[in-house]
Each structure stands twice: as structure tokens, then as C-alpha cells.
View 1: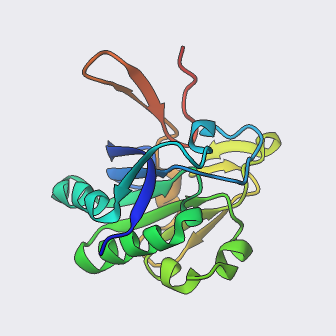
View 2 (view 1 turned 90 degrees about the horizontal axis):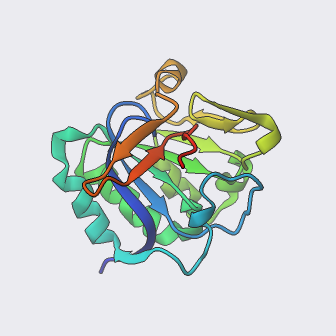
View 3 (view 1 turned 180 degrees about the horizontal axis):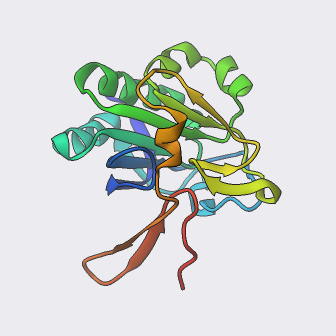
Length: 188
């Protein structure tokens, strides 16, 4: 039986949210409330779309060789640990995709979470820590200088993370313009 996930958004192809072309999954809900967060629309615990983990997995699986990995962001992905653990275990067991996670929790907080060992066993790169606007860097997948990068497998190096573009712009079929990445452009 598949668990439900509260999803803010799904971007099937991105080059500014981790190495290579990736699917990006933004979780909906975050109680950390970092001042200056550039995803405040993901904070409400009641927003977004409730979707089965199975459906999210199938969206990713349908992309096949078009992507090399997935990126989890938010909101706070680890505030939906049960659903994320199910999704990450399926990604790890049933695909060759890499996994990168952005979390507002520090490394110590993530390590102390229930299910931490299982969650982290399915992650290649964890970018951890609250966003601190006064320490903004927006490079190497770190939004602020206090964030720590944890290479949990040998799949990527710090140089791979430094090579990721800071931002990307998309124009939708109806002409809507959106931006993504660690240093997204301010549009409008």
C-alpha cells in the first residue's frame, strides 16, 4: 500500500537543481520558517497536492534515461519522512538514479530523526541547514554559507556540485515564465 505525499510541485527536467538532468520534487509543508526563504509558497502544511508515492515514483520512472537523478526540495522533505522513505527506497532499489536532498535541518538534526539511517542510505548528496539570508552565497548548491554538503556516496564530487548552473528559466506552453535553481532569478 502506497503512502501519500503532500507535493508542492514536480519539475520533470532541470539542470539547476543538481548534477546532470534531474526530476525535481518539491514537498509541501515546512515548519522551519527561515527568514528570506525563496520558496515560502511551500511552507503551508495544507497546501499543494496530496498524491500517492506510487504516482510520484511512476512520474519519475516514465522519464527513463532522460534524467540521471532526482532532487528533493521543499518545503522540508524530511517533515514527510514516511512518504520520503518509501519513495527513496523505491528509487534506490528499482532505478539507477541518483538522489540529492535539500533540507533545512542541520546534519545533526537529520541524523537524529527517526528513520534517519534508512533515509540517508538512499541519498547520494545531502545539502543541510537553515537558510540564512545574511550568509547568502547561491553557489555550489548552497543557498547560504552556513549550509553543509554531505557526499554520502562516491557518485558525485564537490566539483560536480560547483558545475551546476545557479538558475534556469522556463517558458510554459501558455507563455508563463518561471525560474528554478539555487539562485533563482526574480521574475516580474
